[in-house]
Amino acid sequence: MAATSVLIVEDEEALATLLEYNLSTEKFDVTVASDGEEALLRIEENTPDVVILDWMLPKVSGIEVCRRLRSKPETRNIPIIMLTARSEEADRVRGLEMGADDYLTKPFSTAELIARVRAVLRRIRPGLVDDSVSVGEIEIDRVSHRVKRSGKEIHLGPTEFRLLDHLIQHPGRVFSREQLLNAVWGSDVFVEVRTVDVHIGRLRKALNKHKQGDPIRTVRSAGYALDAEA
Ligand code: CA
Image (cartoon, rainbow, N blue to C red; front, top):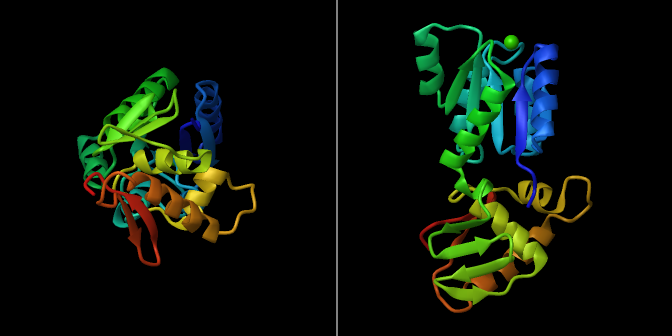
C-alpha cells in the first residue's frame, strides 16, 4: 500500500523542515510548499492525502488556499489541518468555517501534529489506515489482495487492484486521468493518459461480472469516481 502523502504548506523554513523530518520518520510521503501559490500548484500536480496549511502565508493566504480547495470537486474532500499563530477564537472559527478539518495553534509539538493527522485520516478516510476497506458492496483486503462485491470474489490484475484501492479511499471524488496516472503508475513513469481508460474498463468489467449496477462513474471531460451506491 502506498504511503500516505502529506503536503506541508509553511513559509517558516525551520518549522517546515522540522515537520518534514518528523513526518518522514513516521513513513509519510512528505512534500513542502513555502507559499500559497506553490501549494495550489503542487496540489494540482498531485493530490495529497492530507494538507497541513499555515494560516499566514506569502502570495496566497492559507485561508484562501483552503477556500479554493473546497470550491473544486477534485479537491473538496482533502483533509486540511490549519496551523495558526493566533489564538483568537474568531480566527479558529473562521478557519473551520472555511472548511479546515482541524487546527493547531503554534507552538505545538510534532507528536501532537502527527496524532492530529492520524485522527483526521481515521475520521475522514478510514480506508487510508486500515488493512481492509469497504465502500457500498465492494470490499478490498490489502493484505491478501482480495476483492469482493456483495460477498462474491472478484479477480483483478495488479494495476486494476491499485486503481480500485485508490478510488475506494475517496468515494465519490472525481479523479482526472492525470491524477490517477500519478497515483497508480507514479509521476516519473511515462504512460499514455489513455492507458487509464483501458484499465478502468477492465476494472469495471471485473466489478460488474456478477452484478449489474456500475459503481464507477465516468465524468465527461473530468475523469472517474467510485460511488458507494451503484
Ligand atoms: Ca507563516
